[in-house]
Length: 414
Image 1 (cartoon, rainbow, N blue to C red):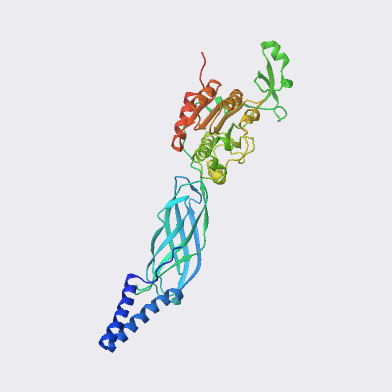
Image 2: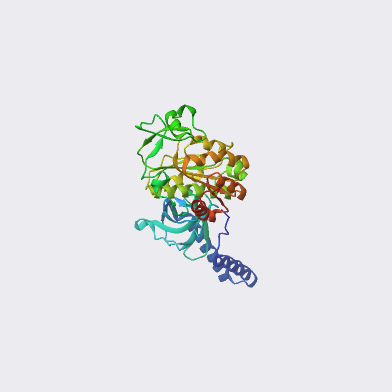
């Protein structure tokens, strides 16, 4: 907090006038001016003393509405400061200290206080709005008050209370609905498949897909169809979808591993992932968000529970990239099953990445890939392999990339 000259323009003028009175009294021999100068200095000194002895701060609290901020979303901050003053005070100014992750006009007029000797609540309520600028945990405060005495001669700047930690979640972008009905993409209207040993009763056969275990070959169906068929079980269940967020540092900016909010590309990726989760949950899917190595980033989210997605977004406020490269393992996570929609959010893609991801397209009813800054040739190769793929140019292009991916679908080879 910058130090402040303790006198206002009026107080500085009073001191200058007192000094001038002393000089004239000495030169002209006018004793009355000497008394006048002393009186001015006494009044100014009393004003300064009153500012340091009159106020007593009891507590400062803050609340946020909504209680979790989000990038690009407006939130209201309410500040309650408990203060008592032995003497009445004049209005002043206040300013709440904002971190770089938040923007807003956090300043205003601090109201006058009556004498605390008369009793009363003695609390001051302030409010202002902020916008989330960067994902992460950001401090608010302390509250800085500039007070003046009733005569307007002296001023004092002091801090009230401590800091309040505010969570800024990633932005959730409104996405369009999937072009297929839930039943057609592993949804409510059809039975979803599961691996053997998960408690289902109905055995069915399906064509062999790369990655299936040879031990699951259904020989009778293979002989009947004259093509390799494998066993799988069928069970009625809630439609399921998966969203995979690639956290490998090699596909994002180097700053993304240091702290949240530093790499624009990774911020776009996190926003795209949570936006996809929100859209799938709205459409009734039970959604699991996971890392590219298969580690869940949250508990599974039930279909229709959009408030749980808001809580998930708050959990992702501190997510960063990590060392390692597990994107090639994503296909193995779904080997041997045919699942509902799978949305993969990643960054830069190489030729080896597209080759590793290609088999996964045959294990999902709707394989979607969104690549932040991905090259067009990599996207085209994935579409030829059966993916609904699109590149995201920036954070404003998430919805457009989603539409391009799900509407255009995979490339068709004639």
